[in-house]
Image (tube, rainbow, N blue to C red; front, side, top):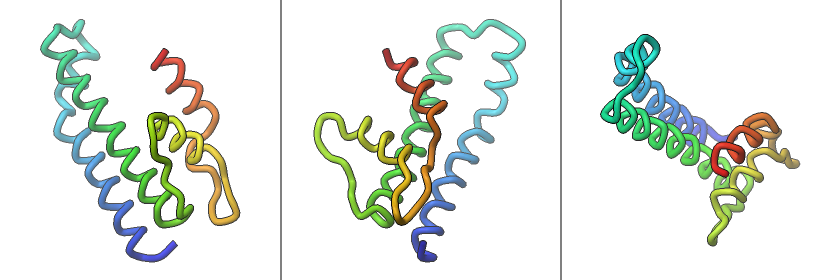
Amino acid sequence: MDNIVKEQIKFKIADIDRLFSEYELIFIKVNSVTPDIFDMTILGSVLHSFYNGLENIFEIIAKNIDEKVPSGTKSHQELLHQMASGNEKRDAIINDNFMYQFFHLSE
């Protein structure tokens, strides 16, 4: 993996770390009290941003390492399956447990 790709991935990981740091207080709060609709809206937004961050990393890998980025109506699912499969250039990025959790949450 070349240095530019590594730096792109590190930048996206730093974005995700920053996201969790910025919302640390809401995570602490919902561990001690039942979240209200406002809290749930914030948490939903954080989850969405987190997943988008992961997907951005997966797209960098698909484009620059696999040289194949899924497109079409099922591109999000195809990208996850692609990241769960290793190839001659890289190992699997995510495991079956991640895939199981994701698809059971989205049903």
